Figure 1 (cartoon, rainbow, N blue to C red):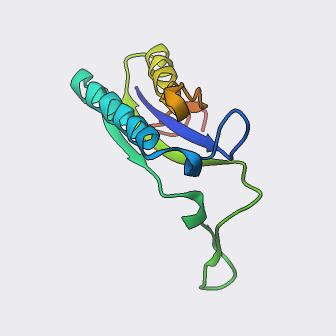
Figure 2: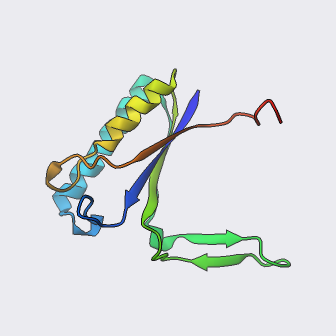
Length: 133
């Protein structure tokens, strides 16, 4: 079964310092941790795809609008306290395995090398609409 893991970053708080305050070494350690996790997922055959996303300030919200022109609202969105930083698509035997992998990613190092314990959302990827539809 395929699962999507969504990595949410929070706005700077006492528990989660803004990434712009991290040292170069702290950022490099965090990125290397993600590379190691991805290599392990490839080796286990569970890796389907993973991507980091540009900052929330580059996001655009798009609505169909009236007529032929889309209505586009550009960031930054100051009311946003959390933003999607990246995702993985995994092919795991069980949901428990997907949760185990999410817990590992949650512990990615942050400032001073301490685990971030950031929330990782795990959701099954639907291959078809629910049977009741």
